[in-house]
Image (cartoon, rainbow, N blue to C red):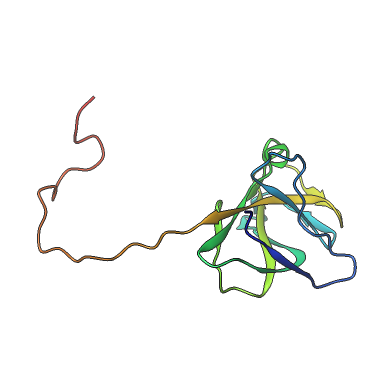
Length: 146
């Protein structure tokens, strides 16, 4: 049985997430506002834009939402800043996507444009065990050779 993802539309023009194909793992989410994405270092200042989706999600127990870039947008330099972003089960605020433009030209997002994809994923929490010592204390990058 599929878990239920309950979606609240916060604006009358908000669009519910949708799977483009029956066997997709990611659901498309859409912008509720027009936004111009300036290149990452516009006027020498890093630019990250908040993209409103107009969605509030009730994530099922022991699940998370992962926010990922759309490949079509990524090919144009438009990517989710903290991809994959994690939305925890208890969060009930608006789903806001953080995008940045790693291209050199501004890019316009229009109301109703696909801006990211979200994946509902199961969560397993670990039991934390603090250890006094371990056999693998040193090493790191390249320590096992080629």
